[in-house]
Image 1 (cartoon, rainbow, N blue to C red):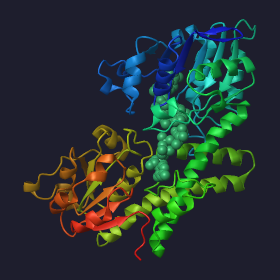
Image 2 (tube, protein in one colour; image 1 turned 45 degrees about the vertical axis):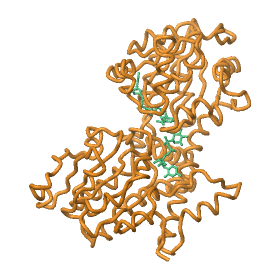
Image 3 (cartoon, protein in one colour; image 1 turned 90 degrees about the vertical axis):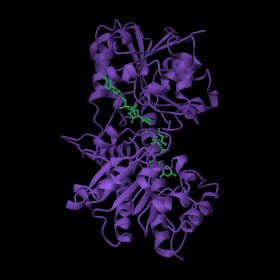
Image 4 (cartoon, protein in one colour; image 1 turned 90 degrees about the horizontal axis):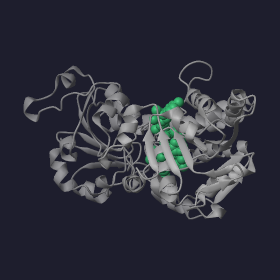
Length: 481
Ligand code: NAD
Ligand code: UGA
């Protein structure tokens, strides 16, 4: 049965934005609500083509389990299209799931969210919608954005022949576990002013989410809860990373400290994994947005408090690059270093704000030769992230490369871990891919130039195995007793 609300049944959903959130979120809605036709639209033709690819390994987003969900629903009630206005016109409910990056120019540059894509969506809906349309903010937005969306929609139809209800329904999925998070969410949050619209959206989620987990709030609480959730999560990581540095200085072990504090039920065990700093498209941008808003609303002390979470994160990334240089006798110029993992976390091909970027850039600046391995990230993406062309992988027979001799930094990708490690003075583990947990260090160690180091920024390898293989070993948050 189609969902129903006061103005009639919801049969058609249009989601604007076929990205990391729009694609998987709509795939799960279509899978769980076979009576609702769901179309994901985007202005990016290549992305839509990839969502429509016959070969499911070519989907534009890599998420465990996504291919199976898409296979069940695509062509039945899940569609991908570039016909944005046509699909808006046909929809009872329109989700806005477009990018909201940090502004790079003008007022608020470096902190405020760039809302131009959200505004463009609101204008497309204002132009093309028909009848009554529920507009759902799925993107993460500054608190009170719904006010702007509402006024664009209201101005579009002064005679009131068409009508709109605006809801906030932020997304809490994490990359790498998106399908699990969508299928069994801790909660679904719906903020709004129109009870009928709220219940229409709640009815969609009720197909698979227990009602007790569907939270209803006012619009502003919903918008602000999303920024707050990300700020709290990121703050935990900066907190444990700050303690990791302190452990290294004092002989404590951050894993033991995390276990000791995490067993306190008020603190809890999750999100206490020290590492090279948080990455991902959202933590930094959402905290900076919060910082900007706090300053805007006259709360500079609150802004400073949250800004320190981001500052500590950047410090952690530079700190790791610096200590690698220090351990390698104060110089990495011309030295070959293997980088294992470029994605910002395991089980995703996303590199946005990955700690590997800043760490690699620091090492390249020092003249290092980086052999980069990642099971999912494409070389083109690494090239865009490092803003430096890839070099040919050096040939062991041919001796040092021109860049190595001149002291310039250079990088290339290696398809196998063994190739990345060949001739390297050190290996840095920057993403916690499962594969890196079970490497055969006894076989790998002889490939490296001795004395060789393993820098384990993710605590994924067994120190005893690495040291038994004759390698020097450093891991995050482990002090020398
Ligand atoms: P994304 O960059 O992967 O995808 C956004 C898509 O929107 C792009 O394909 C772009 O072409 C399209 N787009 C932009 N303007 C458009 C327009 N006017 N018409 C049609 N298409 C348009 O972004 P994302 O990672 O999916 O994030 C989307 C939002 O969700 C952001 O606000 C983000 O903060 C939030 N969010 C992201 C995650 C995550 O894990 N990535 C999780 C929760 C929330
Ligand atoms: C995060 C949130 O977890 C989601 O709830 C939210 O929806 C999303 O941001 C968003 O708004 O975009 P995501 O960035 O995909 O999800 O991944 P996380 O698992 O949160 O990891 C973020 C970063 O923190 C990664 O670099 C990860 O390696 C790091 N991290 C995470 C740690 O260093 N230690 C931890 O204990 C946990």
